Structure formats: structure tokens, C-alpha cells
Image (tube, rainbow, N blue to C red; front, side, top):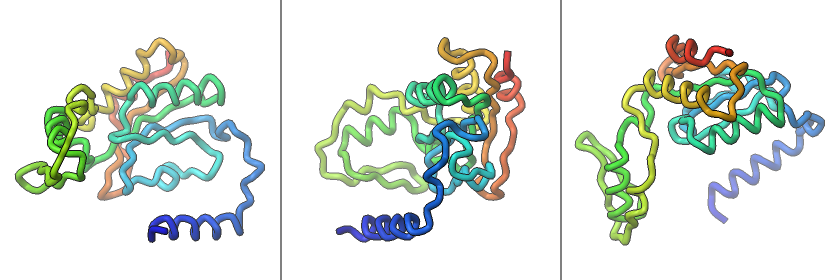
Length: 192
């Protein structure tokens, strides 16, 4: 058994010993959802004051409004009653450190973990890789405020998203823990 697997299972055993949340309803009690990044430095429960059962939290690389993220938001609204959505990207995001071309080239070289330094990304794997990565839009980020605005607009413009759902746009500051509103994104996300 790996060290990590053992740690997770032991933590779960402790959690089960004091578990008292079995009666929570499936719909989120506070009727909102957050789309945010998978970065381990972000804890939406803490920065948004959430407890179990309060809200849906949808996470992916960059917190981007991918097709799958929008699928989850639509389910969150249509079947589980959320009424407000947040798009929250963050400072110092890894998605700012590469482009679609860089990712495609790294994967074409090998499928091993790459490294980064001041001169950029480097692949150290022996191969083989795959060129399939060159055909994926990795939804990289050049500018956080612009990516939040782009994602809010994409969500609001989606044909399966009702106009009455407000979508707020923020950037989480990994140095301070604060949420910084992107006014243009929140304006674009107003309920219609």
C-alpha cells in the first residue's frame, strides 16, 4: 500500500468516526455554485465560508468554462436548484506558464512528468509520447482578468444557461487569500 493511500484511508477512518452529515439534502442549501481551479492552494470552503452541503464546487485546471464545467453548472441549476454562479480564477496559476503548443510538444516527446525553470518547460522522459495533445485546447491563460471575463461570457452565452442566473467573476489572490472582483466580468454576468 502506498504511503498516500494509507494516509487517505486513515484520515477517512477518523472522519467516519465523527461523521454526522448523513442527513444532508442533495441540493446545495445555499443554492449557488463555484467554478474554480484545481490548484491545491485554493480551499473554496474556507475562502467562501462553506460547510458540507452549502454549495457546488466545480474544479478543473484553471477554473475554466470548459464544456464539462458548463455541463456541471447546467445540472447544478436544472436538477439541483442553484440560483447564482461564481467563476473564480487565481493569481500565480500554472495555466499561465504554458501554451497549447508547449503542452502539445511536451506530450509528443513523452508522457512523463515535465519540469519548469526560468527558461521554460522541459521534458525528461524517454518517450514514447503522443501527438494527440496537439489537438486539444488546453484553455491556457494569458491574463487572469481577461480569462475570467471570457469564461463568464461563455457561460452566459451558452444556450442551456437561463438568462436569470447571475454569474460573478473574481480572481483569488494566493498571497492574501482575498477575492478580487473583475467588474467587467460581473457586469457581463448580470441576470437578464
